[in-house]
Image 1 (cartoon, rainbow, N blue to C red):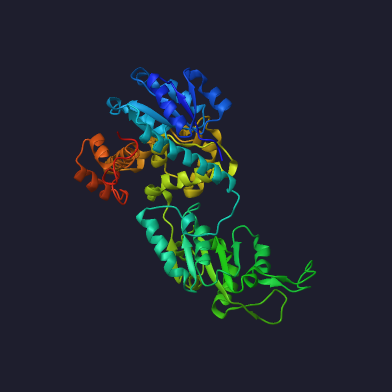
Image 2 (cartoon, helix red, strand yellow):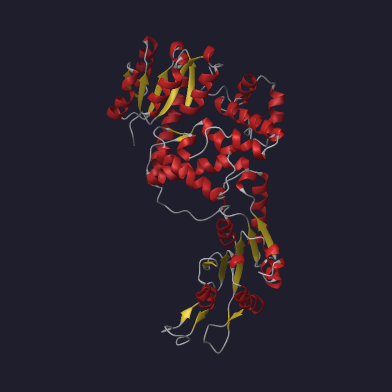
Amino acid sequence: MKPRRVLIANPCVETQRLAIVLQKHGWEVISETRLDRLAQACKLHKPTVGLFRLDDVQISRLDNQVRSLLAATRIDWIAAVSRRCLDQPALQALLYDWFYDFHTLPYDPERLMVTLGRAYGRAQLFAGRQEDSQITQPVDFCDFVGQSSSLLKLKEDIRKVATTDVSVLVTGESGTGKEMVTRLLHALSPRREGPFVPVNCAAIPATLIQSELFGYEKGAFTGANQRKIGRIEAADNGTLFLDEIGDLARDLQANLLRFLQEGTIERVGAATSKAVNVRVVSATHVDLPASIREGNFREDLYYRLNVCHLHIPPLRERKDDIVLLAERFLAEFIARERLPAKRFASETIASMLAHRWPGNVRELQNRVSQGAVMSSGRLVQPADMGLASSGLEESVVWQTLDEIRGDAEREALQRALVLSRHNHSQAATQLGISRATLYRLLEKHNLSSGETPSDLKDGPPSTIS
């Protein structure tokens, strides 16, 4: 376990008295008066957390200097600031982007040690996640991140359908997570102990897909030197996932229909049929009704596959889920690649919310991974992810004025809640509204306000004096 070591930046006489108290409670204290040596001090002493005293002069010029200093340290920082400075927009942005928490002056050792303890615990937790990052977890709803109403309904539909044995058709644009939905259906079904066999109908050449699906007998054709079990037979007592079913050649659709009707298969070159017990889940990004009208897909096969239909909405229609997904992807990538802790700048969050995400969740995951690699500091900036620094140009093309206003209102609420650590009185004051209006807006935008407002619990949070 790492020692409880705190680096105090920009100390003063009062800070020196604080250091004595911290040392008595088991903290190892390192002080650095020269801000240009913070990165060197972190490398030399390897502190777990940092305490940065921001005086009024520094706050007036903090945008460039302090941000660049913190970017080079790669630890969690707690800001010590005067209460009268908290209403400054520049300071609010700095606290949101670069600090784990803040402490209002004068120093209250007891309250500060609680805040430091939380930051230390977070550092230990992150270290533990790095240790355990290679452990694979079973597929469950924990992997299905989101709180949008459409996704919550989809989860409920998955629960209902999973317990049955009917055929399911999963539709959605490329990158929305159709295979994850299919794996969830299998993992939550009575067939969970059986095999899950995926088949990408678009990836297998038309000349091979017959033998891949149904298998073949020895000597069935040139090169068939031994019997081969097909994918359908391999899925016996389990789930067969037919991905991109809309791309299946029409002549093979008749064979698949016969299997669905009779529950039997016939290997290529075989004289007899074999019964198989398989649940079929298929997925496609193709508009199958349109494909039927064009004569490219059999209508009778469509109805066999589409006993139950699950549709995954595109990410651009699930804006409530974008930040949650991005934070999940960032945490997983950092743990897997053993990178220093990073998070998204507020401008990056705005850019993500404005982006159209034509590649959906897959694009988001790839851009987050890119951002984690390309960012030079602790904050992932829009450019690191290949996003425009301002989403206004692309957002006005597809958003109405009411939608833009709603997004701005929602972002202001989220920002106020984060900066106030979910202290509702402080958030309402910061926004210039009453608590009643705050609660109404939280309900309007379907934002979680927590089980109990933090200012109504057993006293004020550690960031409020």
